[in-house]
Image (cartoon, rainbow, N blue to C red; front, top):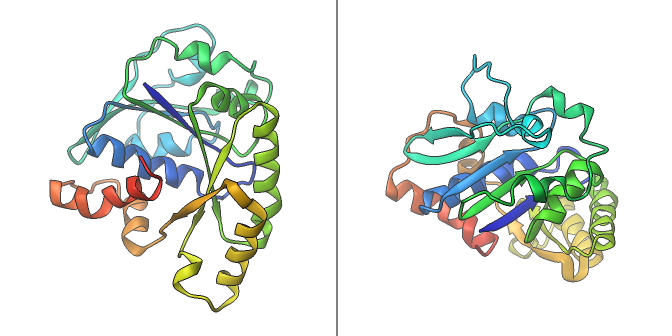
Length: 234
């Protein structure tokens, strides 16, 4: 079983979108996947669970010692499980003990577990990182994202973890001109060995994240989801 933590101290950096794409791509490749929403804002939960869903048992209950059943999701033929989040996580997300996530999931039986985290490197985000085998740090390409992303890497280093940073957008090597390309090059220089590549922000990728009723054929999975796995080398 492999665990992947998706984290960045900066809000709006693409964490939940990346978690959505990875969950669908991994489950679409017939891996047994558990997606875990650890953000009190419950963005991942809102995407995967239909409107009107009122069940509140999820990560908060699991951390507090209960044993809630994961929510089984069938998203257009792609199936996986979800541990949902809700507002109650706000009570504990910043103060959670470092090994709470590791202990909560030590008996889970999946091929892959994906943790989506809130915009902090403390508490629940730190615990998810400590429980994980791999840390993916997605970020939008903007000057405002450089400092928070570097701070995230520093915080991970303090717990002896290495973050792999993926820029969300066009590879700067594809277009050497313009403000975005220049910003991306500056970002990459500062990241050094922590720079792992780019995750494309194409029209089709945006549709995947926004479309809650899409049906997934094998051909569509190969064309639209497999490139995500190639981009992050899974």
